[in-house]
Length: 193
Image: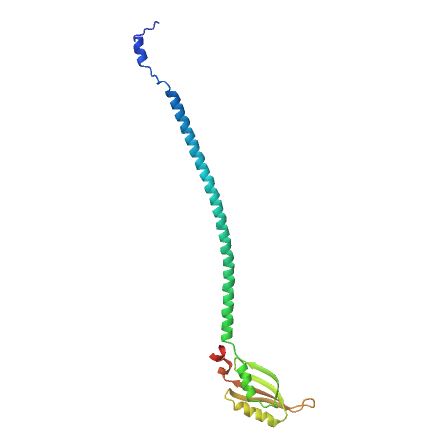
């Protein structure tokens, strides 16, 4: 078949697109510049991320160190709290402590010089004490009982037993139960200070 060209050759060239001269280099350089900017931005973001990760690791290490300090302070706090509890217990015990020294002072004031005490048993619950001792005769036992009964600090004095001493221990052995006023066992406010 035969080809027929109905268009004239001049008109054919009007429909063809032509790029202006040198525009290909401009486009190429523009694309290269965009690539460089993209790579630079990517590099900057990568660098910032590495720095941020590094700072985060340093801060995490600081947090761990602070947690260790808090834990050590927590241990000290527990120890201090325990010590405080012990001290308050001691304080309470001292406040409720029975002071027998006042009783011994009162006993000494009403005891004859010839009395020799051998044994002493106390009962803080009943506010009593039982004392065993030795004197030269039965008259001395009577004087001791009268002296203890005359004390305002003792509410009851009871002779539990007497017996004559044997050959090795001359004199009379006795055992006396004494009930003490309860306020004598508790220290006064001035004594606590």
